[in-house]
Length: 384
Image (cartoon, rainbow, N blue to C red; front, side):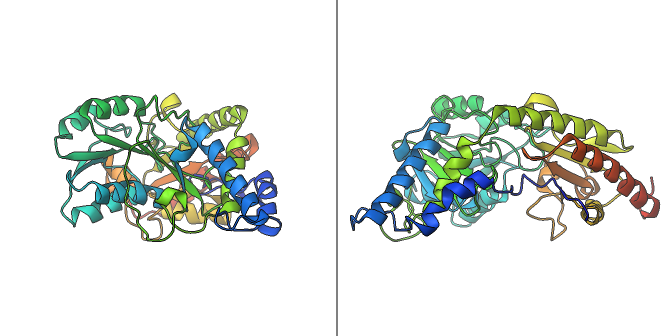
């Protein structure tokens, strides 16, 4: 039987069995709707689980429970944060973001531009760090919101969120952070970092798919994107996904610093091994300013899509270019924003780790990537 080495954890992770165990009672035993309206035991048990989970999520980022809105995941959280804020505050019509944000941020802002909003896109350097001077210069009296991710989904670059938060506070603009990739991997304190809105998701941390949360700071007004009842403080109507929310909270409780440190060691070991392959380069920074589970390498003179498919045959699961665009073969907007060429973007491969990966798997991956790249270069139409 062929082995499988799953290295696409930045896209989604395997659910921890303990998470599933925590969820089961709310599928089969206490499966009522978590509403106060009926007052029966099934509803009250579900409501109790919902609110206990809200407390866990809030505590993990230094927030209050009433500041946590449960959503279906990171994309909905980003939409609700940016579009909901824009629709509720039409007196200011300027938004600021970076060129390497997730598409669920960039496409929301592009959509708002079609309705009369203006947007500024901050440049990044060769490692993916935003230009803080440009950020300060772009904020003006019409600026409503700055939206900058905590860590990049492709190259793992960690932004200085605390410094950006200070700039936003001094300029008196609201600050949204997409923390989907960094949540539980990096410390987050919404008060200390001056964050007004923060998006997180469960399925990146061994929780269930289809559940996430948006932190909405006290006093921040959002217009609901859907009409309905008063669920989630009137901001996000619809019956809450109680099993998913319970699983989300359990996944947070299971985070272990030793596991994060092991991912850092495996990340560095894998990086060093892959960079021994000729004509390869690391995209993004090295060390503490990079996510603990992210390795992104460009292999020149080969297509990343071909590397992905050949590795898949060998049981190694990775992504190429932008995870959201790998099927369309469009070059990664993140790699291009670093100042690299289209062929570099097409030749980039992302390896993302989890707590379940091992050193032996890293050796297996390094050996097979070397073989695949060498084989592909022999038949590559692009000369070396």
